[in-house]
Amino acid sequence: QVQVVESGGDTVQSGGSLRLSCAGSGSISRLSAMAWYRQAPGKEREMVALVSGTFIKYGESVKGRFTISSDNAEKTAHLQMNNLKPEDTAVYYCNARGLDGTGRGYNVLGRGTQVTVSS
Image (cartoon, rainbow, N blue to C red):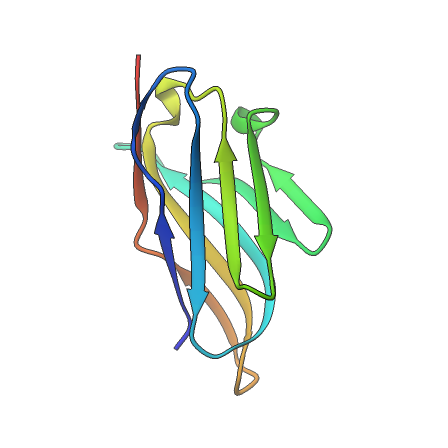
């Protein structure tokens, strides 16, 4: 069973930086895309950043501040977050999509890591 686990969440002051990590495990034959989502209290989950091969997409609110990277061989993804703002406070989730060792597609979401930005 394919799983992803996030780490790196913390409490930082406004203007600070954090680096989130996501590690995939299980029978991963192909890693097609990795993405970060976030959900703040009382709000819907939103896409923060996505990487698929050379294609990268960012949510409008994080453009220029966040950078996503991935290493398919290591089955990892990272999200470098700079110039954090209080409105970035949320639970951040890692998502991975691809094919497992049996050729079945998977689309998994981790349990999340809390990021809190104080003003």
